[in-house]
Image 1 (cartoon, rainbow, N blue to C red):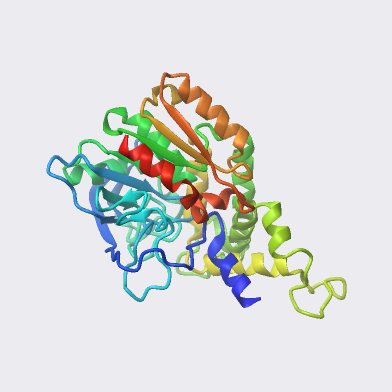
Image 2 (image 1 turned 45 degrees about the horizontal axis):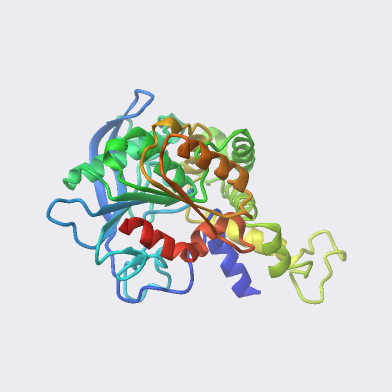
Amino acid sequence: MKSVIRFAALAAFALLLPSVSFSQDLIVEKKTFEMPSYTTVGGQTIKNVKIGWQSAGTLNADRSNAILITHFFSGTSHAFGKYKADEKAAGYWDAIIGPGKAIDTNKYYVISSDTLVNLSPNAPVVTTGPASINPDTGKPYGMSFPLVTMRDFVNVQKALIESLGIKKLKAVAGASMGGLQVYEWAAGYPEMVEKIIPVIAAAEPGAYLTGWLNVWAAPIMIDPKWNGGDYYGKEAPNDGLAAALKIVTLHANQWQWAEKAFGLAPAEDGKSPASAMNAKFKIEAVLDAAGKARAAASDANHFLYLVKANQTYAADISKIKAPTLMIYAPSDLVFTAEIVEQGAKKIAANGTPVQTVKLEGPNGHLLGVVAVSQAKDQIAAFLEK
């Protein structure tokens, strides 16, 4: 039971960091990129902007071999390698990034970047968002922090890329919300992107996902401790945040996963869920544990800002010209196969070469993290072309 709870506690909307290490030797460093100020798409200025990032490989002489990895909703820039040799889990895409792997760090200089309002702002670099100190007041921003969009995430990443002297990226790749950033890169800065690899992400998410994102956010906003976002220095709304992440965990998986992993087994052997109101099924206990574990390392306001950024995402598909490798999961309940395929057709209608790869398995949306290696050969071949 403990091992099952540990799995789900790391799982969520790809909250999972695989417990099996694929890279024993690749050690990476968490770095900080800073900007004195940044003006959002909405016209508001944020001072002292910081995001975390990491890299592996060597930038070639003409700086033409850089690949950017953008992360999912609950993720960080820790996409590959380890920060310490004795670290238990490598980055979430370590199965495909590293020496000799699909995204080969012997060939490419691979950069992975945090977004603004990252869900875990202190892991381990402070990422600018509502939990950050407003230099004008000396207090956390809270809900006075400007709303930010996918384009804002990309704009800060662009500043990072340019600070390294890189004028064009070999590719941009990312899963889920990272995939939305991939599309935004291709639509917003087509001259800077040679190829794109959006994984488990639709170019046009649509109203249904917008509604689901509202459902994700709801438990936070009805937690009295949220207090309209004013909780810094007080008890945080971790009950609401845990419930939100519990919803995300289930939504990111799929019914086949639930049936295969748990069925209707009780949380405690010999204690039937029918025996008392507080007697739970195993799946209930696992989801509760997953939400609580992730909430302890996350920030509720950052969660809400990420929700808004996802809800307001709208890339101009007609501007996407970069050859596209679209990887998706037919069992995905977040970005359904039909919506992904619809986006693929629209991008192809631009005259843009589009390839699609399906990930199979019972884990739904989460397959884009835990089973992305199914597409390793196609990724390697796509980058080589």
